[in-house]
Amino acid sequence: MEAYLQEWLGLLLRWAHFITGVAWIGASFYFNWLENHLERQQAEADIAGDLWAVHGGGFYYLQKLRAAPQQLPQHLHWFKWEAYFTWLSGFALLCVVYYWNAGLFMVDSRVADLSSLQAITIGLASLLLSWLFYDLLCRSAAGKRQALTALMIIAWFALLSWLLSSLLSGRAAYIHVGAAIGTIMVANVFFVIIPSQKELVDAVREQRVPDARKGENALLRSRHNNYFTLPVLFIMISNHYAGTFGHSLNWLVLLLLSLSGVGIRHWFNIRHLEGHSRLVLPFSLLLLLAVIIALRPQAPAKSQTVSASPATAEAMKVVQQHCTICHSAKPDHPGFAAAPLGIVLDDESALNVLARRVHHVTVVTQSMPLANATGMSDEERDLIDRWYAGRMLEQAKRSEQEP
Ligand code: HEC
Image (cartoon, rainbow, N blue to C red; front, side, top):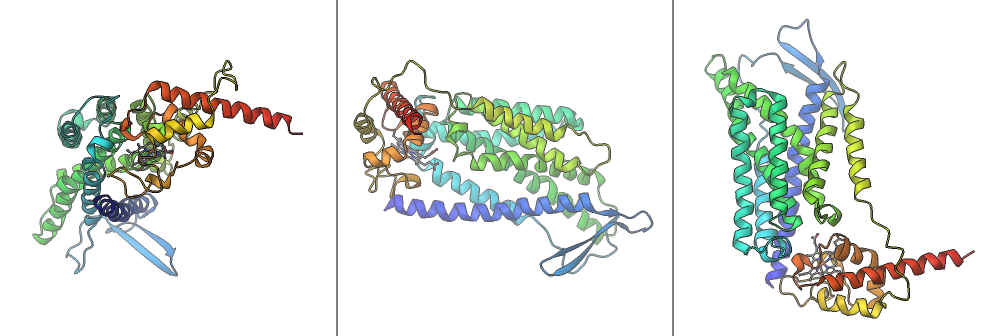
């Protein structure tokens, strides 16, 4: 029953997290787009720019003012709850999925022998320390120099990814890097951006000039948030791709994919500017391509022959011993009410259908059994590898014989 309720709790939180996240990032992309597409007005004294748009059966006309209005309008819309709820639902999800079953989802004894409590402490510390480092950096003298700040932020996340992936399971390491970036983003909104907007509104109300420094800081932080979006979105879907977080250099894969995301975001930001660098997009896509090529599957060794490869019945024995406690129509594992992701490995025909994925998660990424919960040995992984290679060679032979 607990596993069943936990699954629903996870589902509802993930749904809410997704909805609020779409609303937050969507609004942020929209305002960024507005800023880039405003038709700048030189002649008008009060209007900095305006634009026309058509959407959903109507025309919209928007203006951006040069300065604050003389009087506050009756209804002024703020955009902040999307951000706060994205973080709150995300943090709750982190607790339900990862901290509730930390032994299974965070600790991997082949990476480091930690207790659940140690793993959770490391996870929480990574969120807090990332914000403290980033915030101090932005406030320091170095924070005044854009390129240096960007380099330091990249260095911090390279270090964090490496540290976390040498302490926690690959998927937990990835999700904590993502949660750390998300925490910085929402703390930027809460501690810097919203206070600066409050200052603007207060200044209008009190008929005084707003503190310009607060506005500059807010602009810088919101620009940083803009660059964080693509990496954080990749990390949120990365858990579906064991080839990334399960790689032996998973921290480097994360870093390179994130840099490529930052580059693509940069291109969206500069492509309207005159004389922008034409290399940003090709370079970012090349980086992505390089990762895809570097992670390509290796062909099985030529020396392996079909006769030496184990029969499916032998592979099935290993699967029954290590997988079906979770991946069964009726799992015996107390943590699962149904087979995870609907992957059922109860009989040989299911194993045959899922052969490629089974090989991928047990041999290539070694991300299964989850946290090596059932203690699968290297010999057993090798058996699956030889069984799979035998299948491949057999298939290749068969297709050669076909006319
Ligand atoms: C302790 C429970 C548990 C055990 C034991 C376990 N798994 Fe999983 N498996 C999971 C969970 C949970 C997921 C879903 C992870 C997610 O949400 O992405 C999963 C996902 C998978 C996936 C899909 C993920 C992908 O990247 O394709 C495959 C394939 C898989 N398991 C195969 C296996 C095999 C083969 C074994 C045995 C060698 C095994 N699992 C043992 C819990 C388990």
